[in-house]
Length: 237
Image (cartoon, rainbow, N blue to C red; front, side):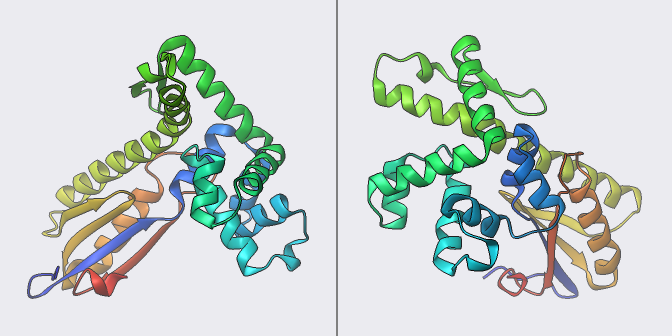
C-alpha cells in the first residue's frame, strides 16, 4: 500500500530493543549492561537467569517466556497480565517476575525508586527531565493506585525512548538540509523512522540516518539501529 515515488526508495531505520537499552542505562543493572555491551542475546541471558539453567540449556520456549518477562517488566506487567500472555498459571507468572527482579537487582531498585519518587513529587521524569504527572498514585482506589505504580515504572523509560527519537529526527532533518539533499523524512512509528530517498542519494542518506540515530544520545550501552531499503514499506520488512 505504501510505495515510494518513481526514482525513490524507502529507507527504514529501526532502533533495536531501545527501551531495554534505556532500562539498562537508567537502572545501571550490571547484568543487562554487560549483556548488551558483549552483544549477547538479551532474552537468552534473561532465560538463563530466571530459569536457573546454563545458557546452552536454554530452550526456545524458555527464551520466548523470558522475552515476555523482559518487555513486560518495562511496562510494569502484573503476574495476572503475564499469566494471560503466556497461558500459564498466575502463581507461575509471579514466580517468573519475582525471580527476574531477584536477579536484576538494579532494575528492581530503579523501579522501587521511581514509584517512591512519584509518590513524593506527584510525577516522574525522562532522562531529559520531561515530566509525566501521575495523580493516580495517590488514589484511594487500589486498582487506580496500582495503575499509577505501573506508569511510574514505565513512563521514564518509554518517555526517554520518545525523547531520543525526537532528537534523532531533528539531527537527521538538519543534516539532510545542510547537505542540500532532496530526500525527506516521511514517517515515524514508535522506534522506527522512514525516509523517502532519491535512488542516487540512498547511500549517503542511509549513513546519515544510522549515524544520527545511534548517536542521538550517549548511554551506558550502544544504541543499535537496523536499516533496510525497499520500494515499498513492506519490502523494508
